[in-house]
Each structure stands twice: as structure tokens, then as C-alpha cells.
Length: 460
Ligand code: CLR
Image 1 (cartoon, protein in one colour):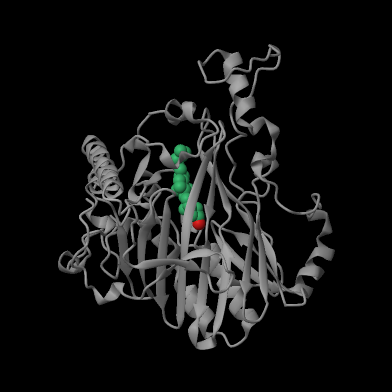
Image 2 (image 1 turned 30 degrees about the vertical axis):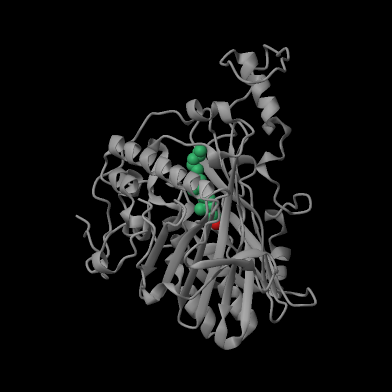
């Protein structure tokens, strides 16, 4: 029997296993083809019992990698660890297909652990923007995320817009990058699965070093499932190091000449595919909403909101699944001589599949730990009744509370409009420009941990 507390006394399991619903996601989304999903309310059975703010805090699971980065004396080695951290931050997404709750405007979430403390706030509702600020030994990590969900028919494509920044104040060094895309497949039929793909360019704004990582799309036969690779270059674009691994498992690193040597000796293993860049899985024209609607209409599983009718080839029934279920790719074992390991994933708890595919870290995020009752801000996600009810297995109760909170939020917004004080000012963050890449961002005001929580609006 597994222990229910970690060595640091955080809970390792939720109060009850999840309810495995057979509710079909397509039945909800079929009327939303081609739409941005942030305004669609979804039934609570598709949720996981965490708010998106808590989900952002999951970036911190491997915060120790930033501590290691901050200790390095050479900027190139620092870059290796910053890249390792950037990849590690995405590992918890593996097989996580529940939808986190949309945070309410003004909702906050704090988490203090041995390696770091983080504060998150929902700073805008339409569009939804979540900001966070974390700090640990000699490092600061902050950012703002505006996830855009677009439904294409067979798949949901997610673009987490926004920038993240790592700073090493003592070294006067700052790194920025943007998040890669994410795609949930097989909405209509088949087993849901998710991939993350695209390019991530991590820039050291002080020295001009870059780590350009490619998260590969699964590709034919899932050949590149979860793979990540790329190079660290200096400011004159000279390649110095090769980084490789899987965002679900590990990141390794070797010097560029070891990589070249390895390539020469193993050229049979590497077939060059085009320009080597990953293609978006939605490059296929069959993904356009119109094509999907046509297929559905022709199958007479409609009615759907489309006027276009096309005759179909009865001999070639349209394919409504979105590729096959990805196979596991345990055959992937490139191990280049002279490599070092930068980051390695923690194993998932054995009961994970009955608990929303949570990691140990995720299991602990909604716990009200002893001592918190008197210190937590009342806007903290842990006080959300709908999330708490879902966590306890009360689906109907969760649904009722979710509706109530969304109505309360709408009423508050209307009241602000009527009073012509239409503006909402976040409590802990201010809109501004990211000082390094000049993108629009939300910057922390430094106040949260003083814990002056009086006068918070009642949002729950
Ligand atoms: C991926 C990593 C990014 C931040 C980010 C933003 C939005 C998240 C996404 C991550 C993971 C997948 C996600 C998404 C919002 C909704 C989606 C949780 C964390 C789920 C899987 C959608 C399920 C419901 C659809 C099938 C309708 O840095």
C-alpha cells in the first residue's frame, strides 16, 4: 500500500478516484467547428479537479533544474539547464486530457515549496490571461499565458500565447521563450491523444546564445512521437551543443562534434525528412472545418451548420478519425557518446490512470495543508467549491457550483459596466511590456507575500 503523504508531508492521492464518464466530447463540440473555444461552457465531466492557475504551477515540478542552472559559471552550460527546465515544464502534460477549470477573474493560486514559491493570478477574463511569478535560489521565473483553443472538427488545437522569462538577477542575465503548440486528436472517434509540437527558441538576451528546440509532430507510424531536439548556438550562430530527448522522459546534451561524429557513423538511422522542421499536424487540408462538415453531412450523421454539399465517393468512406492511436516508441534509444543528462522525468504514481493521469506533484496542488486555513488569500483556487466537489467525486454538485460561479462572474462584470467602472485591475500584476523581448506581458508588483489580503473581492 502506497503511503498517502510524501516525505515532505504533501498528499499523494486525491480523496476519491475519478468518475470515468462515457459522455462523448463530440456531442458537445459538434456545433463549435471552426470556433475559438474559450467562450464555450463545457460539462464538468470533461474537467480535471484543478484550475488552470494550478496547472501553470505544474511548470515548477522540476524547479531544481533552475537552481542547478543558476550555479553554472559558463553561460553555455547555463543554457543547457535552462533548456532542460523549459522541456521539463511540459512533461506533466503527457496523457492529461482533462480540461482544467477556467480561472475566474481575480482568482489567485499560491504554492510554496522547498525549491520555490509561486503566485498566479487570472488577470483577464475575455480574453483569458493567466499570469505567474515564481522565485527560488538566485532565479526568477515569470510569464503570462493566453491559451487559444480552436476546434477543427477532428482535433482541438491549442496555442498557448504569451512569453515566459527566466532571470538570474545576480548574473544580470535573462532568457525568454514562447510555448509550443498542442493538439488533442480523435475528438469524433477513436481514443483521445495529445501531442506538443513546434519550435521553441530560448534566447539569452545578455550573451546572444540561443537554444532552438524542435518539438516534433508524431508523424507517420508515430516515428517521432514526443521527440525534442535542437542546438545551442552562440551569437554568431555557430552550433555548440546538440540537445535531444523526449518531453515525456528526458533531455540530454552533447557537444556539436560528438553529434557530427555520431551522425556519420549512424547515417543509416537518419533519413533526412525535408527541411527537418516539424510540420503542424493540421497542415493536412482535410483538417479544415469546411471539409470536415462536408464529410459529416455526407455521412448523414448531421444536421450540421453548413450549406456546402458534395457528393461522396461511396467506395471511399470519409475518414473521421484523426490518425491512429500513437504507439509507444520504446525503440527510441539514441545515445550519443559524451552526452550528459540534463533532466529526467519522475515516474507517474501507479494509481495515476484512476486519478486524471495526475503526477504526484499534481495530486498535491489542491490540498489545503495544515496552517493554510489562516494564511491563504480567499481568492485562492483551493477555495473553489466546484473544483473541490469534483475532487470529492460529487459531479452533480460540481456542475451546480460551476454554473453558479460563472453566473456570479457574469453578474459582477455587468455591474461594473453599469457603474461605468468597466475596468478591472488585477491585484498582483500590472500589464506592461516584457523588458527583454518587448512583447506585451504582465509584471508582478512584488506585493503578494506580504500577505495583506484584506479587501479582496468575493469571487466564489
Ligand atoms: C500546454 C502547455 C502550455 C500551456 C497550456 C495551455 C493550455 C492547456 C495545455 C497547456 C495542455 C492541454 C490543455 C490546454 C487547455 C485545454 C487542454 C489542458 C498546459 C485540454 C487537454 C483540453 C481537453 C478538452 C478538449 C478535448 C475539448 O505551456
